[in-house]
Amino acid sequence: MKRIAAVASTVFIVVLVAVLILLPSGIKWWIHKNSPELIGRKVEMDKLRVNYFKGSLRIQDFILYEQNNREEFLGFHEFFVDFDLLQLLRKHIVVASVRLTGSRANILQNGNTFNF
Image (cartoon, rainbow, N blue to C red):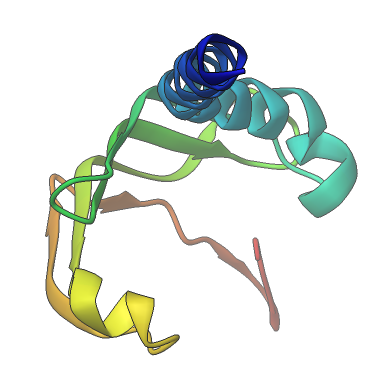
């Protein structure tokens, strides 16, 4: 009985670790695939990293395209958010720091209309 519990616990931990490792790649793929339908624009990003131990999220080389899917509407080199993990356990979202580097925006006005 103890052996079955040990094997089940090991399998559960291995599956959980695999899911946590693969989750950012799956989210990145889902955003890339579904962004035209969800927001009407194509989204690309090079990296999406989640550090579960530090409570941080990092997105690198992000591009949101114009509605024609060829020209860049906005983008950035890196977006980093650091959360307070203890507050997350208490069901409160507390952001310890936010950093945005290399931001770019292409805002155009045609008469009274803008490209967003």
